[in-house]
Image 1 (cartoon, protein in one colour):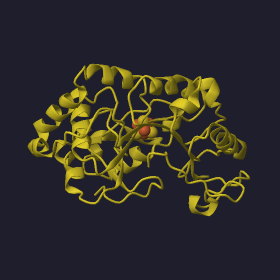
Image 2: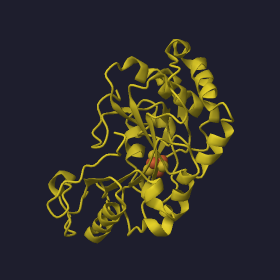
Image 3: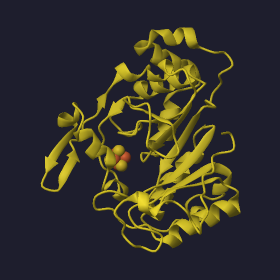
Length: 285
Ligand code: SF4
């Protein structure tokens, strides 16, 4: 499990943390919550309520899956933890360091990590101290000893193959979360505005935003109970990205098309804006 991904902007998913808890309106129809329920570990990590499946707010680490990227020989873009949030408060600092150690040991891959817990990002990078790469390798070797044989002296910090992104669904969440991206060392910093639930003005959220943000993804919500993304919100983000020369990736309209009509499936609404398919990637890619 985990190799192929249905997510348009990546090739594969690597899940080594399971479980989460809701933090903001973007979590309202959390896909991971429903997916996790179907897994063997789902009965401990989720509960069935009168409103449907909900997280039990427990976290389950899966260190036996840490070596998966090492076993993948062909280079690929890997979305890290599609079923959790790496910087959830119950994920230990050492475990996140172990994940970064694995990513350092596999520079052939590109890793994309998204979080809604942006406030923890600078804390975690600060916790790593002044020898971050050594700390990450050491943490990884506790679980995967063969990392010792994969250390490449040409790999430096911050890791060139790790993109760190923040999920935002509206202006408030953009203003709360985006400034933390500025505080961390990352080769690529990105924003995923999915599900987009309101208009976004990046300049109001982060002064000089286009100098910090390397990539913007936009997507409407899909699935049961999904909420519409207005055409003007997506167009405005597209225009802000064009003005700022920031690569823009339009993932999907979601359950509602660009005219606000609900469709049977997100496949029916597609991803075109004014007939154009925006599938740009950060320049390092
Ligand atoms: S942070 Fe992500 S995985 Fe966690 S509840 Fe929210 S949407 Fe789901």
